[in-house]
Length: 379
Image (cartoon, rainbow, N blue to C red):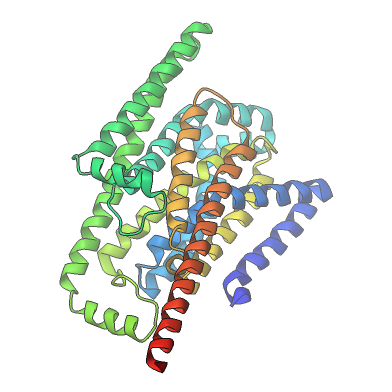
């Protein structure tokens, strides 16, 4: 099972590391290995959230996510995206931007760093909306009940998550402008860019998320009869899932997944510059990491891990919230990538441990109930 799920990841790792040695020797090998680990640690929460969405999709669209999706993730976000940033921010053509990335790495890194506030604002707002919509929804299973119960009540207020996200964006842009003004005003005009990029992130979330939600609801209405089959599967002990999404619903859910993956990859791409400014090594390292995130997503779906460890999804969304705030803070201040990675790992680890303890309590309760039944029947 592990080899079947992670086989392609192992193959890409071997090819990537060999390519790194051929490109730049053992130093390049070390850099690519470090970047791979960085990407996996920063994106573990991505895999958990992806699994929650992917399990709703049918087998065909799951394969599309693993084939077309991985091409978009590896080549689009890890290779093309940094070049596009430079092309837009420096007003260069795509070929000129690639040439700059290969020939003048320091200038290339400078331009990407210069574009960071806008990238962080877009990604931060998209991820913040995911987090807010999650915590404001009333759920049967609650991890931190003392916090989630009152937030679920607040969530009944229409458009609350949008209002909070816009307030956070406004504060971020105003703080950035004030800080820039105090230090000579060289980046005051960028406060406007931060504001526009943040609004673009919010609009992207609302359009893609809204369309995928609409078609998902529509499909479930049309296929209500399948609920009987689900209940039958549950009685037989098979994993129960939502209606397998297909057609338009799955297409928009796929788009949502790709935008989500793009938002998650922002911190990995930006963080990679702390290790190297070589675009080839960056693409190799982050590409290997992205493959493992995809494989881990499929593993979680096929093993039914999210059904067994019910708080994992909560931990992942809290990690998303933390990452969103970190991205918004990095508009102005630098935060070490190790901190970013550890926050996600700690939150998901805590939710996993809570799930294990919950399962243990349920098993003990069932065992005690079974013993009582045996005693009463014996009497």
